[in-house]
Image 1: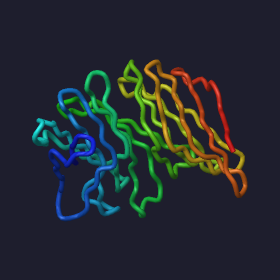
Image 2: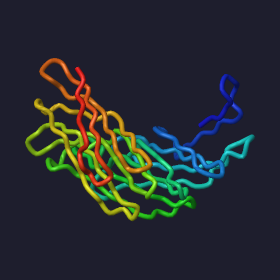
Image 3: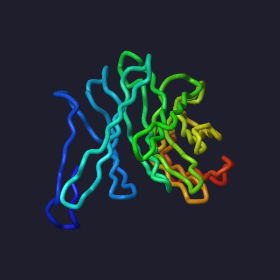
Image 4: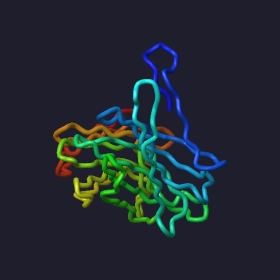
Amino acid sequence: VAAAPAGAAAVWQTGYSFDERADSFLDVAKGPGGAIYCVGYTKGTEESSLLLVAKYVDTGAAADLRWTRTFRKTGRPGSLATDVAVDDDGNVIVAGVVGTSPSVRKTDIVVLKYSPSGVRRWRAYYNGAADREDFVAGLGLDRNGGVYVGGTSRGAATGLDFVTVKFLADGSRAWAKRYAGPTGRDTAAGVAVTRAGDCFVSGASARGSDGAAVTMKYSSAGVQRGRRPFS
């Protein structure tokens, strides 16, 4: 982790290591009071990796590590965080996957909410109908604490689909929506959410040997407002 003004040398840099095995941060978000939240994985073999959340505070001349949290799901070895966001109250929302170990051969989406002091408020999962691959592509928040996760999920008979899931501020699932294109090869790549809760999910939908860029729009209630393919 490093901080520097544009075009300047780093003011400070810091690292994290749980043990001698690989660790990696995959996303970062800034919170109030100089807080910096980094997420990824630690103990980086695929069989034993743990989802990792680390909070640093930027003091200007250095970064102080305030706390770290790890997470795994019993029976689903291998976990990692891919996305992090901070809500208006300073709570930290983390999205990732569990079950990344090759011995499992199926992954579920996991979403975690932590207080600024590192207390876990809730955890939630999404497992698609095929009980196989589910991956995160992006994370967004609305002004009411709603959490929107977009990704890719294998359907029971539709191949790979877009999936968009909304969780309320208390962690309960509000809705889940899927998009299945004509060839069963649909992969979400990013998510954006407005303050009012309009959710946009973009990615690609294969069309034979070619593909189309697709963007979906959902209201905060999960109503599909539009779909725009581009090829």
